[in-house]
Length: 354
Image 1 (spheres, rainbow, N blue to C red):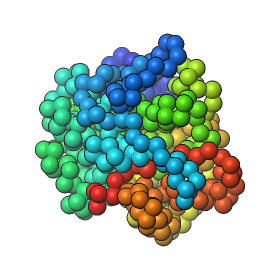
Image 2: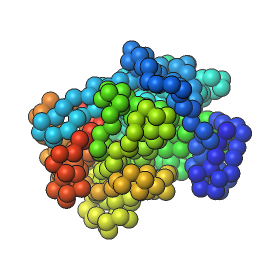
Image 3: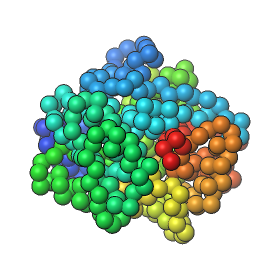
Image 4: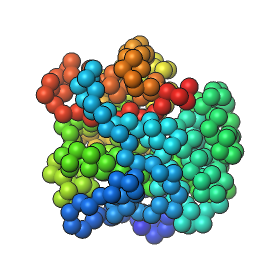
């Protein structure tokens, strides 16, 4: 059963419908919650938390339980999401989304992304034996499309900006009834990204941090983490929620700009979060408010400097990934994060893709 996050209308099917008639994003009506105390087998990866998930591991590449390591330079813990099978946290959502698609007998999925989400959906579709079409900007770099091509997915190049790509993909979905494996719209994807919260809690002995700082575009990881920490608290496995702090790219920062005014400038280095109109913008604001969180914009120069520092400290990430540790420095300077606060920062994408 699905429910609209805007008007509350309900739908008794999943897959052939991807958004409400009113245009609002859909979510599963009830998230599964486990009975009893935590009994987790980390060797099962993110599927160790199947009691929280809407599907089983029909399609898997061994994803989950990315390392958690301390960083002296940033005085925080980094969760190394870039060690996943396709090099980003998007594998969490791709695994759950393609597992549900496989269970339903879907023979083709579509997605719009020239980067991590496209690579993840294409790769997990290949693992499932499901055809995939990935809509990308015509200007996308060949290096970013290589993983999609090698997985055998069809690449559909669209002229224009990122929103034009999404529009073209949605038009195709609505005209031919394709199964939309969207990292921004499909609720199964968010069930997958919620596992980052389950893992963090388990790795920390069921103690949640004071704050988690994350890149913020469509909110795929941000909302996943919010839902995951909320589910843990509801299940009684943890007793608090961390503050969720977002990091957006200047010039593409609708959440931060609404809270703090126009950020100005243009951050083209963090190309993975260049989103002007997040599909779940209302839900992102609700998650920030519910956790006493925030969102700020980060300049291109700051991202470039932080990326160099990450590499010099042994963390070989992509540029978009650098917005979160860069934002952590700013949050500390503003007093949003105090010197003694316990902070986790997911490092979301690998530098090997460039």
